[in-house]
Image 1 (cartoon, rainbow over the protein chains, first blue to last red):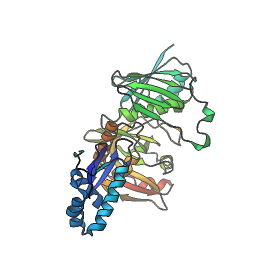
Image 2: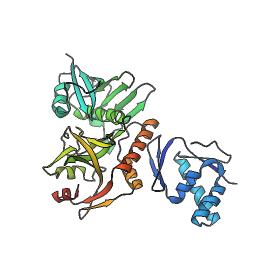
Image 3: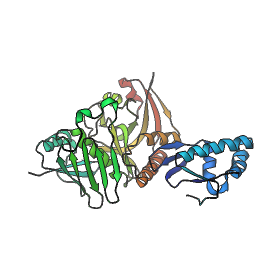
Image 4: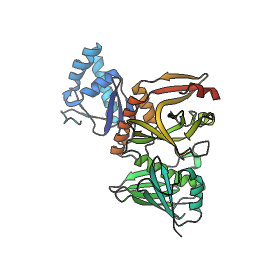
Length: 97
Length: 274
C-alpha cells in the first residue's frame, strides 16, 4: 500500500536553480533537495499516492527502476517527515500548502 | 538620576534608559560612534536595570565548555529574552520594554541584548543580521560571511587604508533603493572594536574560506542562499520571522552576486575584492 505525502505548512521553501531549499520555521533548520527529491517535494499534494508520484515523475523523468525508486522515495519522505517538513499518512491528506 | 542614551544602528534607534551611574558612561564610551542626540525615527525604548539577584554565579557559567543558552520567545504581545547575564522583554506594540543586567560593566550583556533586538527589528523592513565582516570601498559595500574561524577578523585586520570596516563580526543588511545596503555595526568580533557608522550599497558577497592561494569562484543561487542562510542570526524561533528572513535572503542572492573567496592571510587578498 502506498503512502500519501504533503508539504508541511511549517516551512519556507524556494526553488533556486531547479532545486529546493527548505527552512523549517520551527527551528530554522535548513535542508537542500537534489533534483529527484525536488520533484517529489513539488508533487507532494497530499492526494496523489507516492507510488503514483514515483511512477509519473521519478521513473518518467529519471529513467529509474520502479521498485528501487519507490523504496528510495519512501525513505526520503520518512526522513523529511522526521524533521517536520513533510507530512505522511496512509490516507489522502489536505494539501498543506 | 535617570539618563537616556540613544544608540542608532542601521537607522534604527534604541533608547536605553538607566539609573545606573556605572552603566551609562560605559555604554556612551563603547558605542560613541553610534550614539545620536536626535533619533531619526521614534526609538525603541528599553529601561535598563542592574541587579545581580536571581542570576547564576558568572564563574559557574560555561563550566565544562557548555555554551550559554540564549532564550528568545514571543509571548503573544512581547518578546522575552533571557541569558545567564540578562533577562528582559520588549513589546512591539508599545515600542517599550525593560532589561535587567547582572553586572553594570558587562558590555557584552547589553551588546547581546542589542544584537537580539536588531535581529528582530531588521526583519520587517527586509533586512537581517549576518555572521559576516563587511567593508566599504570606492562607495560600495562588500559582505564576508563566515562561521567562527573562517577568517572574518583576519580579513578585517588586513583591510587597506582606502576601505572602511563596517564590522568584523555581525553585519547589517537591508533592502534599500531597489537593492541592498550594508550598514556599520558596533558588534565586534576578535578585533574587539566597533565598526564605523556608515553605509553603502551592497555590491557583492564573498563567503570566506582559507586556502593556499587567493581566488574567487562564483556560487549558484542555491549555494549562495544556503550558505548565507546558515550565517543569518536567528535568535528568535518565530515562524513568521524565519519565513520573512528566508524570503529576504532568497531575494538578495537573486540581485547581488555571491562568490566564494578562498584566501591567504596576506594584504594581497584585498586586490581581488572589487
